[in-house]
Length: 127
Ligand SMILES: O=C(CO)COP(=O)(O)O
Image: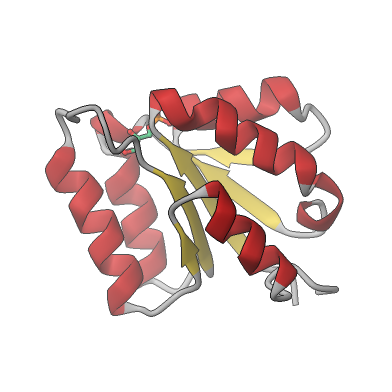
């Protein structure tokens, strides 16, 4: 069954997430993708063939929207590259997103290396 994956990154990490999506575009293609607004625009610019549904920007409630989708069982995996070196105005929302991913124990990766391992481990295998 196709999954819905959430792809989210902070500004300095967006190039790394877009590169990850490009590297795995063929495996991502059969699945549904949802992103916060600016992350979605960045990935779309690099991978125009990947359809991405965008919610609001993270600082404007997008992290909460994705957290809500996880709680409702509508997001099955989270690829989130937070910036470990830059304070975020919406840090409480970031924490809430990480927490809800743990509460529902969905596969989640917070770095390119771990996201590659999820793919190598079969996360995106033939839906
Ligand atoms: O802030 C974010 C994650 O915490 C991401 O939001 P944007 O993709 O809109 O930059």
